[in-house]
Image (cartoon, rainbow, N blue to C red; front, side, top):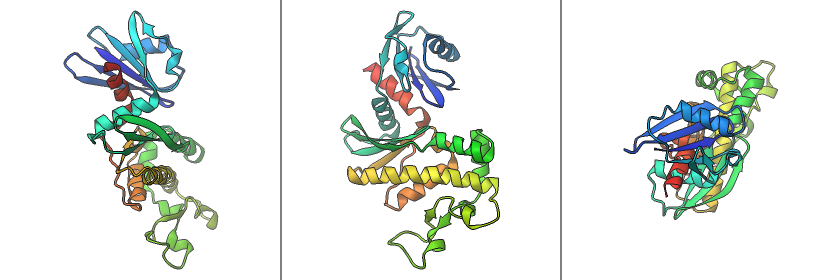
Length: 273
């Protein structure tokens, strides 16, 4: 059996690959820096029945751990390569096609994938961590399920200004309901927005920002596809915001199944080589 671990800022994802090729995924919250004690805890949580032949590590401060553990060899994998390899594998897109991979985790990174090479080309500090941080400040919760449910019940127009609110005519080809100012409506009214509308606005802000950066990078590098992986797109509203914002520049993002553990999968694939 071979295992891989991605030490994310918010969540740790681990994969175990059996001799027959079956994969087992486990996740846990990231509460401390990687060390051998944490590594042993993760392995125990995987409930492994076979002998471990190899471990691949990526993400965060994975190099805190040495090159072996209890006699098992460890491969340390660059996070950009891990995300890229995993995203391309999950998407099924030909490796020869230039693509932009959006790693939407606590922050957001953009990676150019072409001919099996992966280059970090842009990104932003806005991501899932922003959703949680602003939700704690404005909604008094960091529970992703509660935030997602509130956002589904909310309306971004309760907090955002759209183009038809601020100009008298069209701007280029932008639809009239395109966001003009995120949270701009809040300062224009004496009424406080609902918790639901605030949640929808937070997620919309993050989704649109990620999409605008990804589409700009895709146009710059003449990429044909945008692949979105990471745990942040599991917010349904964020996925919708990302899709709508990308559509303005005629891109339709791909959201491959199991994208939340793309980095762990990529590390496993690289470790197998």
